[in-house]
Length: 255
Image (cartoon, rainbow, N blue to C red; front, side, top):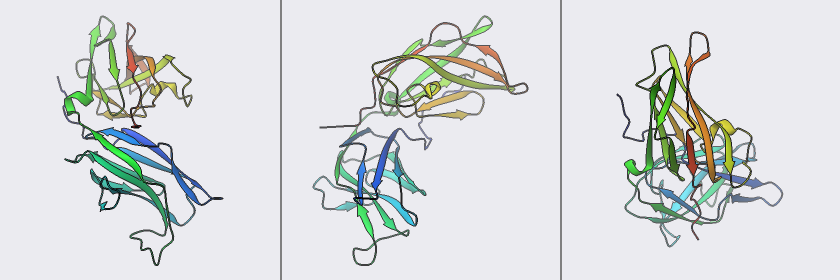
């Protein structure tokens, strides 16, 4: 049976929205502070970005004066309206960070470029091993159906879940994890409940599904596991029992 012990995808574990106000010309973030687990990926989504402007993020040491390239992250990927910071690893735990937008693309200068900054915000790394961040769920045969072990798991922000279908999937199968019927402490932000507490799924061949990110809404999320016959797109095997994910929420603010 195959298992994955490393968290080697660039899927975001944390998502922060950055809003540009065209009337006040101010840039603001959806958090007041950010605390993430080591090894995590951070996605910054820029809203209402003006035409011809590009996004970026900056990090400084804890006194807020010395700019540190990429901060604690291994790499920073800049897109049209987003910035993805990959693999937070650092001996230093406390930083500050701010987002910015600039006219054009590339290095800016205070003298020759138009730049708008957000405020500096505290940024902290919480130390956790890969084994502590990763929850593995085995999908096993159960007569004509499927079952999972363990039946209930508990997650928080920065953790990932891998469902291992290697003992049940045939070469013509596609594994599937679908959430529904949640018992939440508050209404979900969006109606895409089939993602459950996760922001995205990563499919690894036909034997593994990885749940990434956290929607921040605490509660019990019920889900099912399935095998799709790719020749017919029909469900050929489905789960029995009542698998559940207990989401303790996205721990991202530190006051």
